[in-house]
Image (tube, rainbow, N blue to C red):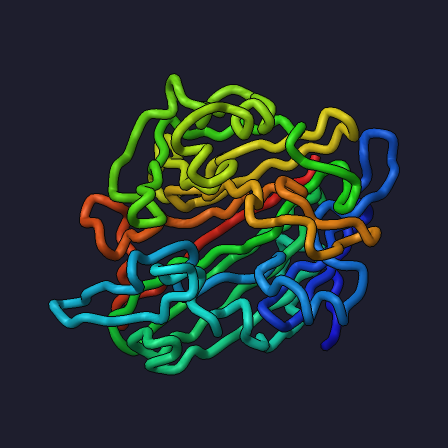
Amino acid sequence: MKVYTLKNNVVEIDFIPRGGQIISIRVPDSNGNIADVVVGYDSLEETLNGDGYFGAICGRYANRIVKGEFEIDKEKFQLDCNDNTNHLHGGHEGFHAKIWDVTEVDLGQFVQAYKLSLTSEDGDQNYPGKLDVTVVYGLTEDNQFVIEYAAETSKPTVINLTSHPYFNLNGAGNGSAVYHQLQINASYYTPISAELGTTSGIIARVNGTPFDFTKPKSVQLACDANHEQINMIGGIDHNFVLDDFNGSVKLAGILTDPESGRKLEVYTDQPGIQIYTGAHFDGSERGKNGNPIQQCQGIAMETQIFPNSPNYDHFPNALLKPGERYTHVCIYKFC
């Protein structure tokens, strides 16, 4: 399993073909000290045997589809349910588990770039249509890690791709990210139904809830709140509805570590961003620096459409038809 590296004069990013997994991002703090800021493992062997979602491309449908069920033109489809009663991140053998073809490409806007390619055959994980997918990983001079997704299908299908790194801007394995400051340009979010295990289709205001990150706020303040939605998940695992969505690339959120001075800005052309504080991490696995991976060891910021969108007409469209092209841009800018 070859390790590929993107680098400019400041940032170095390592990834592997299995799932396109981002296994390391090394950036300086305000004093110039370099640290790896994505949760993961110390060795490639541990990475291949560990949590396959760390830093991986998730699809065909990232996030959850209730009971793994959806319809296209009145035809019913049943996906495998790998998250209790729901389908999550494309299934057991989703894109995170696939070996992507990797080619270095010369694109003028990037210091260095790679194109990852994958063909998902008709019926893969019970999804309809042969899907041809490309993902470009590019790094700019001004420290923007750009992820550009594109896909075309042979039959109508549903699609929602994302990348799944967990960020700890103080350095992975150097304690909790719960003290990071988070700002999200979202006045609404999609609450989770305890019965469904994901959103019920409700879109609610963040005002007056722990999910109000319209101004910078410590993640700890939200995670420690005595609120039904927080208690249900043991933290945050929610989709935020980005303000003023119009399909252009806009600032979605900012994550800042007061201790190191590192800052991460997230930009996207998608309507939502999933924030996840890793409630399922229980310390049973050891990550970087040999330290246990605990809850809120890192924070995932996944740009995407909304969970269970194929089953809600008022949610963003998840349908891709032959002749159409799915595109999605996510930018992680290190400041």
